[in-house]
Image 1 (cartoon, protein in one colour):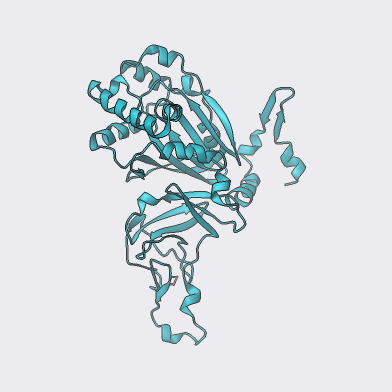
Image 2 (cartoon, protein in one colour):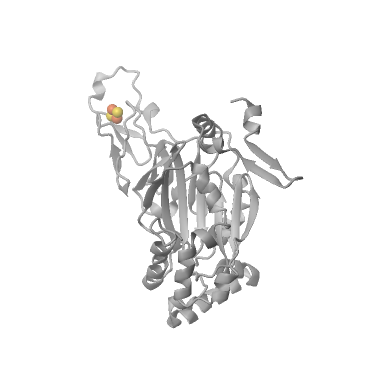
Length: 366
Ligand code: FES
């Protein structure tokens, strides 16, 4: 597509207060091809969290931008990400979503790789010519892999800037979320996997759109009122403040009417929880100062790490990624992030939020 034609798809005329996006941006499959080439093949992309592979031999498989990947904690304790593609004829080496293994055997001709990706078994190897070299047939890896505060990212672009630079202003918000835990954050086992018949950018935009909250989520606000939330908190609920964090990242932040397991009490939590949450808030104040502790405990945020990682730090914390499989179809995966030190009771309280709001069956519609 000609660059000039692309430029006409967005009108951003600040002098006249005009911002418009042509609907073709959400429907043209040629644009999706360009997005694969210029966005998903270039940026850092979230794969998983270190807490999902804590022990040697732990692995998980994920599809990232259409490419099957294998995340493994090697028996040497080192975390690695491989292309989950056999170096023989390209079959998928590991077909399980997660587990623990000492090696991975491809189902097709039974080539076997260890947890460091090395080829360690080839049936009938003596039939190959002397040029056959196992060392050249180890599992490949994405061009770059890096980890920030437990979040594992890959990039298929060898020239991509370093991850910490890429995160730009989003890094501070990621720190704000991770620092809420006193013993580190972990992904709660289990995935919410679903899809939508819509263009992937609509979910990006929706995540930073506070304008829809009062109308689209009316039923949830009604539910909050029934739990005893002060009606003034619901009334003064506004969309929140959005902020450009650089490199395409953004955040929307607000003081919400709902409670937060860290550490904003609400009547639905019960009187018995009040003192414990207050103690958490005081500890965070002592560690990070009043201003940052206020942000951690009393405000909510949706953080977008461009292009497709959304962390909803709201009444619970959801880590969500999504990929287009067609211009009008998006596959979504979401996980709950929580402090490791949380008691079983608090964990249950946190997870109960998912059917109420952040999960795909939440009480979100008006
Ligand atoms: S494709 Fe994997 S062993 Fe042949």
